Length: 113
Image (cartoon, rainbow, N blue to C red; front, side):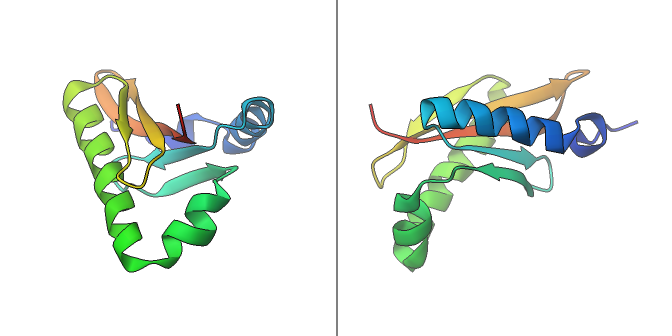
């Protein structure tokens, strides 16, 4: 039986936990379902991305390229992947795996090193 992340995890409790951690660190998070790639949670997304980059078609394409790379590589390698977006910030994708099956990703990033 295939597992669904949102059926296994209390999203409201996870949201509270990630919001608290994000407030302490300033790191934004997203929880992305797999294989639908639906964003189940978005926590503290960067104004740089939401108000600036996501308003421009070319910037969106660059962002999507980075997201796709992270998802594809995490799916294949089943390990944490970090990549610098062509727009500057770094992002990470952490696969959530149950019974050797990928069911979701925890994405964090939009940070500069």
